[in-house]
Image (cartoon, rainbow, N blue to C red; front, side, top):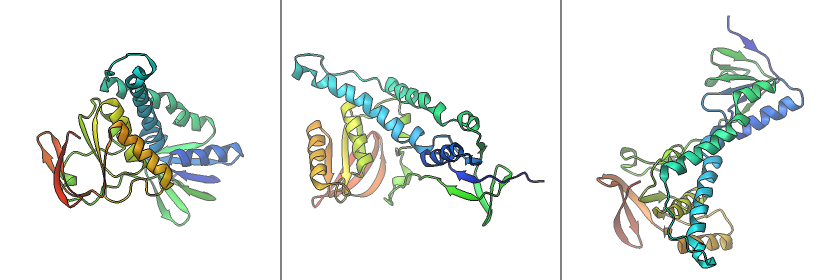
Length: 261
């Protein structure tokens, strides 16, 4: 007979939103079932804000060394070890992981189920062979990277937030498609760590941000060496002996850009 749980709240997804709801519900005495098919902590802990800020911290230190001469300290060009940057990033993740762990939430009194959730009917959720009939169901399943519909892109090795933090060697030449906040923060970080980075933005970088602030950020990035090409349309992607190539139309010209990543 299928085990049926009847909690006050069933939370689907153990990322930032789901864990906040689960902890808050337990704090006010509600019974909670938490279902997660992947890693506890979700995107923020594993492939989002935590690893990105750890990467940025490493990049900030490299940048400070590079600028030290202006303050009378001649430190020279920093030597960056990609493997050690990787280990730093994953060390930060490991340090925070207990806060988002199964053990912590079971300690709070929640029932944690590892597996995919699905609705059996309008009132019943199933996960790992157990059925849950809850007063309220919170869907906090997060998001996944969206690959742009560029011909050939699916045939080459690409990086997303789910893979970029697993690099153990720094890209020599990094091509970034998209000039939003995530693309630009990664572009700046890798530039500061020593990569040559080109950002390709079809329309307007930081389009949803204050124009004056966006202009200041773009000016600062350009001064640091980030090559930002506004109005660059990526027409196709193809494999290249050095890594990958993008055929780009920019300012009325077609150009083939080659990157190691």
